[in-house]
Length: 410
Image (cartoon, rainbow, N blue to C red; front, side, top):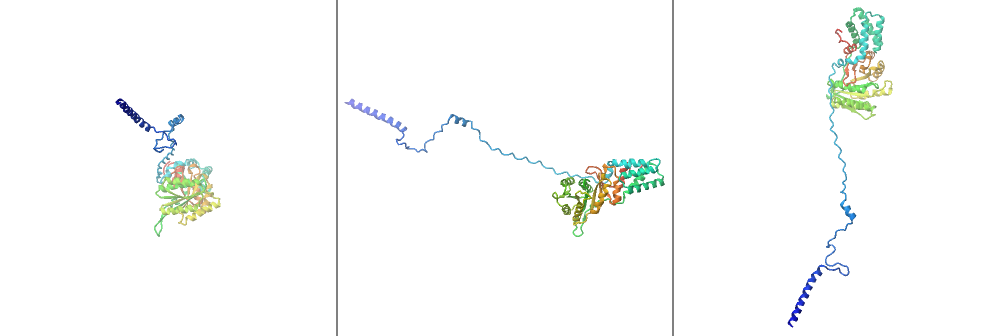
């Protein structure tokens, strides 16, 4: 009986122990509810399983390109520093004609070799004197001036009985210098004047005129260099508004010597530009205002009237001190008809004879002065910026004759 009770007790213990082992296992693996609803934790609390990738998707993920960056435009390069223009200082013009005497080589062939050769003949008969006259006329001295020069030479050689080359050269030089009228005033009136009321300085006004193709704008720039070289301050007015390159050309010339240029738009009224240039010259206190006008043919009445208007408008500030006519020496006697018309319209006070180094007709200087009564004040003897020289009759004749200076033996 005791054995039966003990066996039942052991059996009960085993049954209870087996149940204790099974209950925790059942709690760790709860089954889904029969109605499909969740119990215990919510969907949000449950861990999300990683997505299942196909082999193709896995390959795309592995080889996915890096993000594309939008290219930014490179910054523009900084402009190179602009160096200020170099301001030139031309040498004073004193003695410039002497230094440029070799430029008159073509004219020397007429005056130097031809005339001196004829005068040095053993016998100066009528034929010889006629040849001398022809040589002077060919050099554009002019018929009346030639006859006067030859008559005086004949008389003096006959009275003095001269025969040596040195004496004959001295006689010829004296007659040529006399024909150029050395007493004429050839100075440029470019000194500023002070007004009596307020003491303000009024600049001298220089009007530059001429026909088409005479090299007017270039010569205007060279005149500015002449004035600066001799110690004057200058302002330039670009009143040639019909030629697009004229203002740019004048600005380039002015920039070389540090001068200011007053200009207007292309096609602007030339008189208005000239007026503004003089006003600016008064405000800045310069010594001279140099006004470049448009080239024009002397037989065009409308253009010549317009030139007269420019002068009248400028004179509202004060009188025009100089009106310089630019003449091309290679045109010869045709330049005289040009000069006459310009003189009637704007009262030319001086002549600038350009391209004198390119012609054998250097006698045009004599013809211009004798027929017009206008002094030649400057002569152009080359294309260089400083190849414009103040005119001196004795130095010019000496250069034409191409021998030793006057007063010395050959």
